[in-house]
Amino acid sequence: MARILEGSEAIARKLAALKDKVPEALRPVLVKAGEEIAADMRTLAESSRRTGDLIESIHVTGPGETTPAHSADGGQRTAGEFEVLVTAGDTDTRHAHLVEGGTKPRFRRDGSTTGRMLAAPFFNPAWRLNRQRLQRRIDRVLRKAIRDAAK
View (cartoon, rainbow, N blue to C red):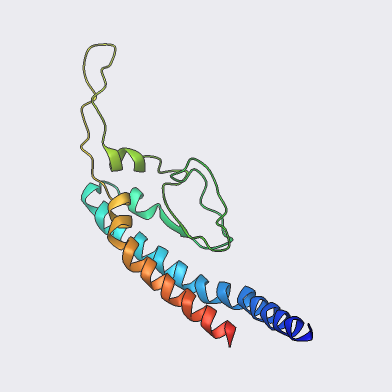
């Protein structure tokens, strides 16, 4: 019976070590991953450049930080402990979704049209280009942090 308790204490110590080591190991990797996705988003958004406001509005929000007001999801959000948010848009730039998906022509009351804007995707392609490689990197760091904490 005493042996089971000793094993339980050892497991409890290792789990406590995990609680401390995993977040400190993952935070820089997550932020770096977000920065890489944002860099690709900026490069892909270059084709739609008029003023550069859209490119400048691409932000990376690290764990525990809050996104800019009126970002792509329509408001502010605080990233979780193991979360990095990449957003496009801010209080001055609210057209990222229109660039990403394009627009249809709209008719004015006088019968004229606003014209059509072709889609110039930058957000989703940047995510798809990086997703698997960054996931493998994060998994490697996570496995290493778990192994180190279990020693």
